[in-house]
Length: 194
Image 1 (cartoon, rainbow, N blue to C red):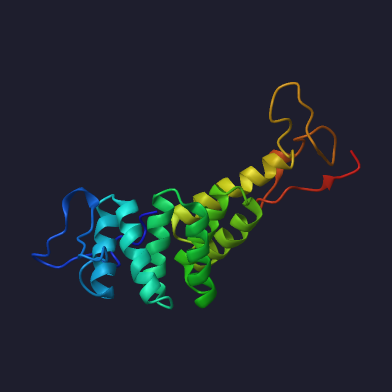
Image 2: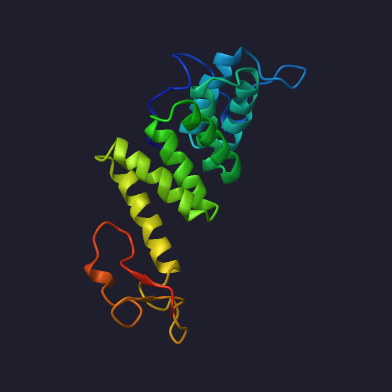
């Protein structure tokens, strides 16, 4: 999830960022600097490949400025990269609800939902992201993968394992019949009587 790496450089010339991804702290355990410093350092740590350390700083910044979409988006990216998909989903969701036209927040919501196994929600938000920015290849690829997963789970492509019957049959005969002839990514005529 590196689409927004250039949004905040996470530091200025000559700024010292601790090595090893550990943010500088004062005596009380609180990071030094103000909220903007935490945001910049967190964004820099994320760009350097330290999502867990970035998450700590950005969570502190989000706690201090809960309505900042920039901070919440950066926090969501750090959480996603650190494998905290449920937390990332909630923060991407908050950003998308505050600004439904934010294509990246819709994308983040969609990929986080997919990681959590909620492919219906994933398809909805990825489709919104693709509609807003159809030229973005990774948005389209994520939507294609989610739709393929939904189709496979519906049995459109036949049995998932050899010898295991498909859960549904497609109109016109056996499972998977006509699956290659479809357009638009939606299953063609699912017969629920089977």
